[in-house]
Amino acid sequence: MKDDSKRSSAQPKYSIVIPVYNESARIPAALASVMGCIRTRGWNAEVLVVNDGSSDSTAEVVRAFAQTAPEVRLIENPGNRGKGYSVRSGMLQARGNVVLFTDADLSAPIEEAERLFAAIKQGADIAIGSRWLEKDRQTQRQPLYRQFFGRCFNAVTRFIMRLPFADTQCGFKAFTREAAQTVFQLQTIERWGFDPEILFIALKRDFWIIEVPVSWAHDARSRMSYLKDGFKMLQEITIVRWNAFRGRYDKPVDAPPRVPKES
Image 1: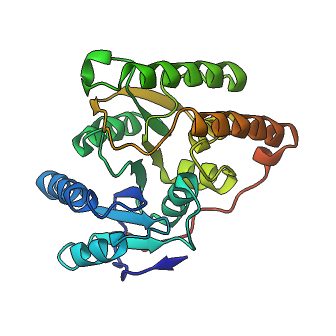
Image 2 (image 1 turned 180 degrees about the vertical axis):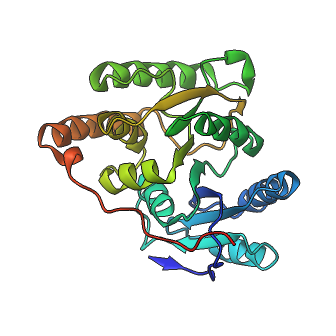
Image 3 (image 1 turned 45 degrees about the vertical axis):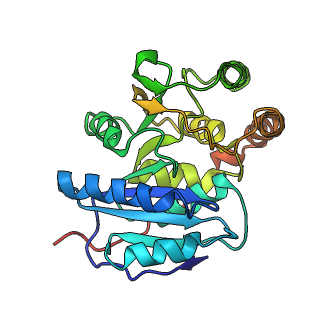
């Protein structure tokens, strides 16, 4: 695992993790939006961009952006490993007291992070964005077929894994440092099906999860195929249940690594 940037000695309050794969076209605008939000709101934050073996110029674009934004760190995966691997890597290397991951398309505007941060400030260990708690917050809805398959997958997931959430798949979730270090050390699914697994682990480890309605706009460039990837995700659900049966999620985890406190 390669981390290109130099770390500041001060611990940030927030970490924002962005997994990317061949995102050279979208990542400049995404980083500009994230950094604009950070600076406008005065957040003490770092941004970790995890490059999942991109074959385009994504890494070079992020490095160039980081020249004028020292908050940005580029982390390189050892080849293409999957979104779940990328998120896990970023979350475990993050130094913030609150750690959030978001998709590179910013379907949920980064300003909505304040809603998740507020839930954690109120005592939640984990706050997850939801597209379905308040449907009128969707500014650009998915095509009907994607809505249908998405809701079907969510219903099956909730039934099999006993997850009491309206939206398990929204790529916009925030964790306390302790919750992130615990959950992501135990995560095993490396591709699209990791979201239900981390929620399953969190409930099993008795973390308090709050589902928060967020604004959201569908991006037609989404690479996920509900037929191909949805079938794979259903297979991964059975892996999660098997892991639970074998006690994989009951194992002790390492304490969060110590980092310098903010001066």
